[in-house]
Length: 235
Ligand SMILES: O=C(O)c1cccc(C(=O)CC[C@H]2O[C@@H](n3cnc4c(=O)[nH]cnc43)[C@H](O)[C@@H]2O)c1
Image (tube, rainbow, N blue to C red; front, side, top):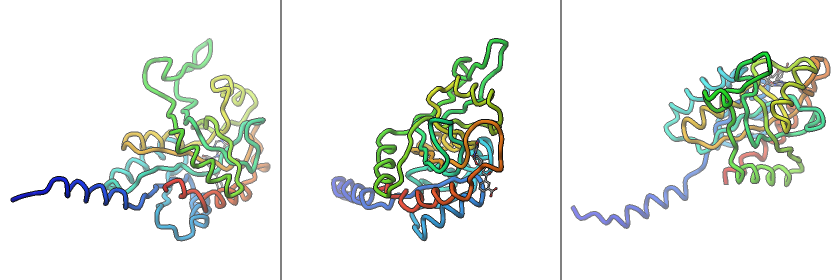
């Protein structure tokens, strides 16, 4: 048979250029998922799935979904509420990670904390593509939603004392926010070769536990607003 390889190549390129790009959005809890779905309206370029709370559940759920998705997704987004570090991200603001850091993955010694990286057992930091982050910032700003950019820490225990908050800042002085799923979702995305974003609407400040002061409703409204424009980064 006389195949024209040039033609076949062109058809493949055309298909790829024309392909609708899709995102997998992972949220920890149903209230976050519902806020994101309200923002997305019926945009079919994203699926919004539950990661569960914490990095282990998030990694397992995300890798399971991505493995079964047969290359359906072009981007993975970890979306939810989070704690803002005082002076870095105030309640009601939006934070996107430029680095997603497993901040409590390591060992405690008599002279302090050593991360897995320092021990030579792995990498606790996953960087976010700068161009993707820039697109996200421009998209949100155009919708009147200013964005703070900085490291977002993934912790297995919500910080609840001044001392624990100070210890985290000691490890990552530029830390902007903390939450509990980012590193798990990011690790899964990296395993499948997909870019990652983590975006947090700040519901509370990182520090002494005062659950009554959490502004969850307001943070979910910010999350909804951000979700209504988020998929423009797919373009
Ligand atoms: O009680 C509710 O109505 C409610 C509605 C939506 C979400 C929640 C959560 O508790 C979500 C837990 C989720 O939030 C992240 N998060 C928020 N603040 C912090 C923090 O200061 N430190 C760490 N994580 C935080 C976290 O990712 C949790 O999975 C409740």
